[in-house]
Each structure stands twice: as C-alpha cells, then as structure tokens.
Length: 183
Image 1 (cartoon, rainbow, N blue to C red):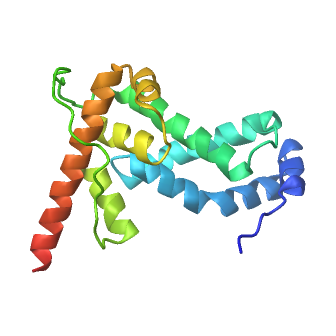
Image 2 (cartoon, rainbow, N blue to C red):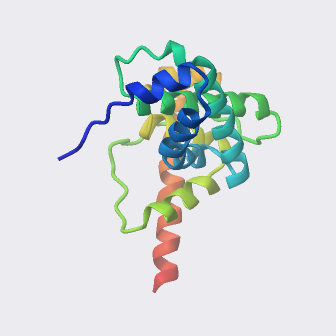
C-alpha cells in the first residue's frame, strides 16, 4: 500500500521562507531529484548543479504550486526543465551527429531485457551521446511525444524518432557488451 503524504505545512513554511521547511523539503526530495538529473547529466557534478538550480527555482516559485498534482511531480518537472535548459545552453559544446531524416524506422516497441541494476543502467545512460541521452530520457522517463521532444530540443519530430531508435540500439549494444564481460 502506497502512502500519500500531506506536505501542506512544509509548503506553507517554504512560502514564508522558513529555512527549516526549505531544508526539510530539500532533504525529502533531493535523492530522487539527483537521480532524475543524473539521467540527463554527463557527470555527477553537472547533475548536482542542475539539481541545485532546480531547487532554487522550486523555492522561488513555490507559490505557483497549484496542489493539483503531487509536490514530487511538480519538483520533478522543474528538474527536467532545468536539465533541458542546461542542454540548450551547452548544446554547442555537446557534439551530436546530423541525422538523416529519411532513415527507415524500425519497430520501436522492442523491449530491452536485462538484469542490470538501476545504478548500472544510469551509468550506461550517462555514457550515451548527449542528443541520444536527452531524447531517450524524455521519451522513456518523461513520456514526451516525438513532437514535444522535437520542440524542446529544436529538432524535427522525425529526427526525434530516429534519435530514440538509435538510443535504444546504443543501449542494447552496451547491455550486450556488459553481458559478454560477465562471461
């Protein structure tokens, strides 16, 4: 049975700039949000920077939280948006290949099956080329449509689809490499 927590007092404290409430909110959600940021970042340091910027926005805009969704979901969206903003700002230093948009698109419903730990999966995702990593994360974890991914990353919808398929193939190959190394 999953318990739902009432963060009303915590939110109210943050609204009044109560440092204890802010610290409690941070301590409650930082581990999960760091995991979210780690999927988008190349290094732990970069993920921590994204998360800190995200929490600064959380505290600045806590009054805009409408309480129609969970507090965790609202904070997570801020973290994802911070990661996308970080990508946009640093896109020039990120190298990504131009994708031929006339590529035939294979079955995207094929699943990747493995017994890797969550930590190992994050490590594999962090090794992905940047554009593939962002498209993969937005599609799989945030459930963005290809159109939304294209809009967020300034690429075409078809390019988003091709990047996603290449990301899945890239991950599948890495997992196969991991399995070979276990033998």
